[in-house]
Each structure stands twice: as structure tokens, then as C-alpha cells.
Image (cartoon, rainbow, N blue to C red; front, side, top):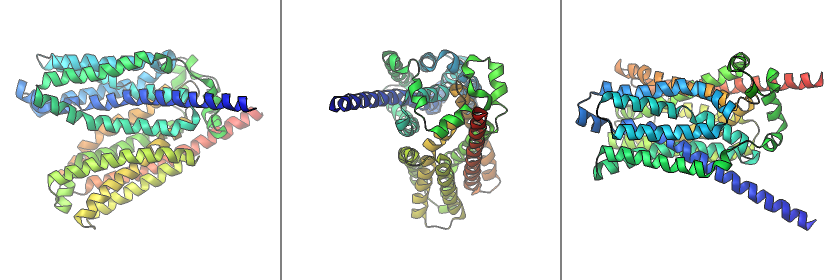
Amino acid sequence: MSTNSLALGQEARAVRHRDWKLISLISSAHACSHFFQLVFPTLYLSLAHEYGYDFAQLGLLASTFYLVSCLGQASSGFVVDRIGPAPVLRFGLAAFVVAGILIGASNGYWMLMLAAVIGGAGNSIFHPVDYSLINHRVSPERLGHAFSAHGLTGNLGWALTPIFMASIIHIANWRIATFSAAALVGVVLLLTVAGRRLLAGRDDAFEAADKPQEAAARSDTAASTSLAHKSVRQTLAILLVQPALWGAFLFFACTTMATSAVQNYTIPMLGDIYHIDKVIAGTTLSAYMVSAALGMVAGGFLVGATPNTERTVAISLILAGALLVVLALGAVPPAFAIALVALAGFCSGVSAPSRDMLIRRVTPKGATGTVYGLVYSGMDVGSSLAPVGFGLLIDVGYSQGPWYGAAAGFVLASLLALQVARAASRGSRSASQGVAA
């Protein structure tokens, strides 16, 4: 008996060790995605000085990057479900390396535009790949921590880019900085090659160990057989009639619009409403991002503490929205305003792991990459719409508009999360009745 217990304990430790190695590898790749998203913006001044481009031309490079990413993200999930996530992940990282080399070696605008297209194609694959790996290769008891680590490292990737690029530009020049960025991603690419056994295949035992309500929800109507063996047309026909997936798409569009409003306009709003100078306002925005990352860590523990992940999402987003309304009203002293911005970031971050677990519940078998690709493309939609729309509010003199809009986005997203959960429950009951019949 003691021998069996010892063997089980050793096996559990081996699984835990493997899980955390895999989570670290996935999270490192995700950090590269966020890191590379800010490479072009950190080069704006250098490219303007080198080539004389105006900010409209420079902004078009970033817009092209995200447009390609949006189109690619919605479709790359089909590839992930059919050939597996590992080769697609290596493609994405390799595309960043190629894009970085092209930027560093560029001799004109069209070479930079080509780099933006290739970089956007690389960026498009990470959500379908990462969530496919997490859902199929990480043990159920560590899923919450995997989701929180994934979100945390994305934020850290954003935070690293300005420091990394600015430091190397100061020491050498912008071309060396871009080559260095490509080399940094290249190191992670080599790690994925070295860890190919961790990334390969899937472990059906993990899916069998899912909580019963999750397993039933993921069976969902006609998707009881794996969609990975169906054609793209058949898969779309099944998925696009599911209200839960449309709700999830709108959920991501709303939360991203809200986050974009905070990221783009908190600095000017703090100046207009609270007369806080730009340096302190910029530090406050950084505090928002750091607090959001800490919230993701805390949210990872909440996933394991309650099966009702939609409640965690709804409560945390409503709290974030309420804090933004208080800020927009100008009802607190400046020092409290700084603290409330950070607290709003923490609340929004708490929702992220539970949000990812909620999407897992409505994902049919064999369509993990496809579903995450489709619903996460809502992020690109929100990112493209929010800056212009909220910027217009400020231009017409409604300086509190972005905070009110962000609050509305968070509240609407909380309602959508509850709706997605209800749709998942209905799918679970339908699947159970079908089995009983």
C-alpha cells in the first residue's frame, strides 16, 4: 500500500513538473506576441528621423499589423485543430523573427510594410495555439493558474518592449534594437523546438478528468463527435449557429474597447479632470497595467475556488466599471483617483482566468483552436474601433467620455458573460437529454 502511495506521489509530482514546464513555455511565447505588438510604435521617432515619414504613414504600419492579425486569428484556429498547435506556434515565432530582420534591414516604406504583414500573420496564431495547448495538455487542477500565467506574461511582454528597445537604441541604434528583438524571439523559438515533446499531441486523460458539467457543456449538441475531422464549411455551419460563441465574440469586443479607452485616454483625462501632470498620469497608467497583472494572478486561484466562473467575471467587471464611473464624476481627490485607477485595473485583471475558463466550457470537441480564434478576433475589432470613437468624444469636449464608455463596456461584458454561461448550461442539458434518450 505504501509502495503504491509512493508511486502515485511520484507520478503526481512528475505531472505537476511537466505542467509548469509547459505553462512556462506557452507563456514565454505569448509574451513574445505582446512584445512584438509594440515594436513598431517604439520605432516611430527613429523611423521618422531616418526616413522622414509622418505619423499617418507610421500609424498605417501598426494598423496593417493588426488588420492582418485580425483576419488571420479568425482563420488560424482551423489550421491549429487540423495539424496541431506546435508547428503553428513555431510559424508564428519564426514570422516575428523574419519581420524583425526585415525592419532592421529596411531601405524604404514597402519593406517596412512587408514586415508589418508578416508580423501580423505571426501575431494572429497565438490565442488559438496557446489555448489549444492549455486546454489539451495542462492538468485540470492547474488550468486556472495556466490561464492567469498566460495573461500575466502578455502584460509583461508589453512592459518589456519600451525598456528593451529604448535602451538598445540609446546604446547603439534602432536597427540594432530591431535585430536584438528578433534575436530575443529567436531564443524562444529555439526553446519551443527543444520542448517539442511537451507541445506535441494531446492527453485525453486530462479531458476525461474535467468536471462533469464542463465535459457535458463542451459536448454541445451536434459537436459530440470531433469537429477536427469535419471540413471548414461543416465546422463553421455548426459553430456559427451557437449563441454562446457570438456572445463570447461580443464579450471580447466590449472588454477590449473598455481596456483600450483606459489605455489610450487615462493620461489626458487625469489631466483634464484632476489636473494631474503627465508624468504622474503616465505612472498611474503603468500602475493600472501592473495591477491588472496582479489581478490575473489572484484570478487564477479563484478559478479553482468556484465552479461559477461567470460570476467571478461579472462581479469583477462590474466593480471595475463602477470605479471608472466614480473617476469620471470627478468626485474624489487626485490622490484617491490614482488609487482608483490601479484598483480598477486589478478588478479587470481578476476576470481574465475565469473568462478563459468560461470560453472553455462552450468549446465543442475538436474545435478549441477554431473557437478561440473566432471569439478572440473580437479583441482586434474592439482595438480598432475604440481609439477613434472615444477620441471623438474628447475632441467635442466630453472629456469624461472614455471612462464612461469603458464602464459601459465592462458592464455590458459582464451581462454577456452571464448569457454565455446560460447558453452553456442549456447546451449541457440538451446533451444530457440526448444521451438519456
